[in-house]
Amino acid sequence: MDAEAETTGARRGPAAPLPAAEAGFDAIGLARHLLRTIRSGALATLDPQDGTPFVSLVTVATDTDGTPLMLLSRLSAHTRNLLADPRASLLFSAGGKGDPLAHPRLTVTGRAIQSAEPRHRARFLARHPKAALYADFPDFGFFALEPGAGHLNGGFAKAAVLRTDELRLDLAGAEALVAGEAGAVEHMNADHLDALALYAAGTGAEPGPWRLTGLDPEGMDLLAADRTARVLYPEPVREMGALRKVLVAMAARARAGEGSDPA
Image 1 (cartoon, helix red, strand yellow):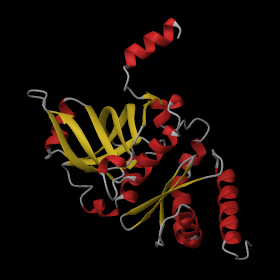
Image 2 (image 1 turned 90 degrees about the horizontal axis):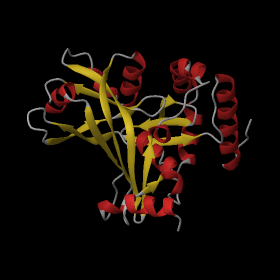
Image 3 (image 1 turned 90 degrees about the vertical axis):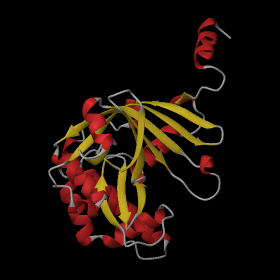
């Protein structure tokens, strides 16, 4: 072992998680899947009086690039903490049957900043429609957790740390796609619920009815009541023309797989 490797090993320690690129499994893909599919998480903030960690349950959505979004009330302790010190962490846990520690979870650390970006509001309410009942109350506001790092535990013997650029999508060149998202979502939900059902089924999800809540260069986010599904495209897209072609091809393949006429 060379000197650099010895130094790196000593710094990490014997049980430290590897960088995502060295983890031996698709750590980036799993982390992004957790970000996109989990609708609530444990938010840890710092009490401004004495620095005591304070953990609470919050509902979560994501921006187009994967940045976590929250709708918080200033009457809540966690919001008061964030307004005094924006440092925070947010735990996304898949949960499931059996040992809770056998299921994947992701902790994102960073700074939670209040946001007036209309897209943040739209994407959050698409993910949590009932929140529209109180989103405009004067004490509520949207916050974006600007990620500094991700800490992933994918289950037994699967751990990795992720950089900001591994958690979030690079949206360079996808400006038209971001700008056209709302129209595309409305169109798909109005005219193509059958295709959305096919996309969801392709992920192994149970029947819906499924609705589209958001799309991005990597895939689509679907919602059926309190259930979510993440649909990845065969390849990334960065403009609307390419998106339409990919969605048509995906629906055709799904129909053909069911034995239906792909036309």
